[in-house]
Length: 506
Ligand code: GLU
Image (cartoon, rainbow, N blue to C red; front, side):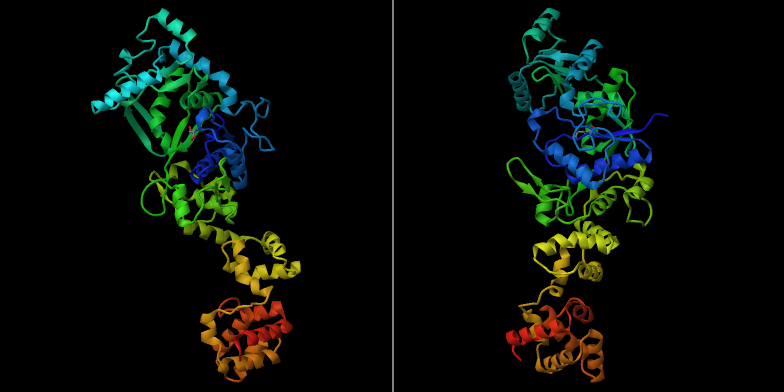
């Protein structure tokens, strides 16, 4: 049996969208499940859409997610340009493979599957305008090619001259007329399309001596021995052409799987950066700064754990068929199945993304979380022993979704409040509460003793405790009194009383 080889083939036209990360993830899971290879290929033949920094962003994002790349990128995270035993198919960046493609375009011309087209951009614009005036759409195919300027209509001599002297020509695929292209998709099943509605796509351009996406993609999938092509559904309309290209070359076809789109949380349509901006969630794995200096936030900087992000993405469009929701990457590799990927679009739910993070945060060790929190504490100039931080993390982690929530939950274990929530002051700061509360705090040095003291006098426990919490934390809700006193100590309790009395009066 052939070794399984799949590829993720992004174009470096901007930051990788989370939908793109999901495509990469499904490819990776498929590869690992079949003990195969996951290849990264950069499809950068469209120089107009090239964005500096995008390639590095893609590689860094995959690395952050833990999606290991077997071929395409070296240990340092650079695209591999030189062939070796480990990287037999290098280079993996299409712009560095430009010399490969021309011969394949010529091969198709020689076999009658393609032809040279000499039409100028202006003449095609005119065709388009004329068709529009008639209420039609211009399409370069069997219905028009015989009256246009190409090697099917010009004499051999005329063609030879133009091929030599002009640099404006292209190679176009000769899309057959009235052929029913029969295709199979691992997710969508059997599909049939009549070729008459399809156009003669440009495959290669003399102007920049570069292939278009379609030619480069098929040639490279063949040369790189790709066995399954798993990609976004926006490429489904290109599938008939790709099928015919394999037929034209006489090559064995990989199997195809087209993934449905990620949809907006509300309403219809593709999940976009605008949805993220509007509803306050990232659509990119990491922060991105465009060459113009515009920035977009990412899951990484927003405090998501890569494991949580990946787990959430895996379940957006794939259903394991059980109740299980939490999967490590290894578990995903075992459980994933391309046949169980859903055909319809998957609605993204930002709240669910947070839920995943909360679950992963709970599963982390206190040590790991303390280490992640430490830089923030240092920056704030907090002077706390590692042991204390560790204990506090253990105390608060159940209440947090992100490590960045820790400070909001527990800041008053490190510093005294200087303000008191007016709503809680109105509710709890009454002499009938404050007098016994103060006396209790003077006499007791632990929370447990306090409770005993209040209970022994049959005083209203809730009101008095909330009054004490107001003094210690500045608000009537939050961590348990016993915990607060344990971390700040009795002396600090009395200091906080002094301040509260000075600010709020008796
Ligand atoms: N370069 C294409 C993209 O940007 C790849 C499509 C494919 O996987 O065939 O999505």
